[in-house]
Image (tube, rainbow over all chains, first blue to last red; front, side, top):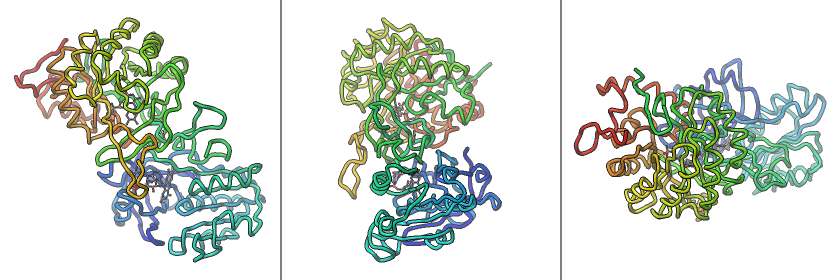
Length: 253
Length: 312
Ligand SMILES: Cc1cc2nc3c(=O)[nH]c(=O)nc-3n(C[C@H](O)[C@H](O)[C@H](O)COP(=O)(O)OP(=O)(O)OC[C@H]3O[C@@H](n4cnc5c(N)ncnc54)[C@H](O)[C@@H]3O)c2cc1C
Ligand SMILES: Cc1cc2nc3c(=O)[nH]c(=O)nc-3n(C[C@H](O)[C@H](O)[C@H](O)COP(=O)(O)O)c2cc1C
Ligand code: FES
């Protein structure tokens, strides 16, 4: 599905990090955390940009996206003012399995940097289902941290920064070890080394990982975004349409 | 009268608009967006003898008004395409053009032999021009004698007309086109992507894992137009044109250059509805141009200015 969505607000919430609220009828099709939208920011750049759904508000017909200003596309996006429109394709992809964690069970949500946003809608839905949510957020440094307080409203929340300027000095995996955090289901989104470390640390548990890959079409047609599957030379999964969320072990990281 | 209907060897097209190979998979994804029967034809993804995984990622990199890709001919192999993809596509009223690739002459011939027997495959498109495979591939597309030999070999085994897809990565595309025409090709498709490269300024390394890739999108449109303009006046077999088409106006520009039908690649990624939108927009544009039938547009830019029916 493709439609023009209207900018409700678009504001910086941390260094180079923006929170964008969009409104439009596409929201009625958005249900699953971890799904993404493919956004055409303007006439240029040519390609769409994949951005995760961070918050879905059916009642208000609004969704939130949090993005980091990286290159041409996100720079242009950061200049969009209230009332302007953006061309949105989506929701796309297979998101997090919310039902993998049952009422009364414990979910550990681990986000690294710009991987944090999709965990917000997930935390919301898990909590609504009576799942205990613990969050570990990893950032480079304090001034790029965001949504820490929002996650704290769902349950325990820990922060790690690489330079120690906020929370524990180190990586999310250090926080998990230091606090001996246990869980029934782990959900994570962030840089590949982080996902790899988590998959290695918890080989026998239910772990869901959200991957990133450069995309062309975003819908499964161009084979830009494939990753390998264990024990096969030719089998593959597409990050855009089979993922971006996979069970740990389902694909090679 | 259907003002958009076009007759080409093996292909009775209700309109001259088709998605380009590699940009539409085997149609399944786009079928979620619209009824594939509205298309003139579908050029399916390159098929090789065995399944191939293709290149490591990143496989795409954006460029000004374009993109580089180095997919590397990922496909499930010809037998699975015949068993799974083509029968699925048969539910739609749309002729299929099968893109045939390989590393050796024998591989091309074997794939062509098998896939040309599928009932909904109405023509083959010989992909002699993929810039993203290390072995073979490129020589077929750059050496006229080799291309001619391959064309002859495939013509001999194919049950359907054979179109040959030209590479723009040559010094003289007219030589190439003539050699392929003389070898018996039924038509030409052009252009494939242009070899290019991007380097990440932060890491100093190429962005594509394959280092180089094929440039497509609006950036290559003027090159495609120029090459079609030259080739269409030098050969008498029909040309299906492609390279950066985004709108109905672009389609007409390709016809004026000498194309008889067109394919749309990269633009599908930007707007999944681009093909049906162009088909919808064409009649009004023909009215505006004072043209009854789209075929009248072919070759209008040529020096003599009059309409020329090449090879029909
Ligand atoms: C499924 C998915 C969800 C994502 N969700 C978010 C999110 O919620 N918030 C956020 O800030 N970022 C997210 N990203 C990353 C985001 O897509 C890139 O940061 C963005 O495309 C950069 O565009 P640009 O024009 O600013 O940068 P440029 O570097 O100019 O982009 C050039 C090209 O590279 C691609 N590209 C660059 N970086 C990435 C990347 N990390 N992943 C994929 N493609 C990339 C761009 O899409 C574009 O095609 C997500 C990526 C994926 C695959
Ligand atoms: C991602 C991608 C994959 C492609 N794969 C193939 C292919 O398998 N076989 C082929 O002959 N051409 C392939 N092409 C080339 C296109 O069919 C087309 O010739 C080219 O992209 C120019 O058209 P465009 O600018 O409209 O994309 C591919 C192009 C892209 C962008
Ligand atoms: S981005 Fe095209 S297949 Fe995933």
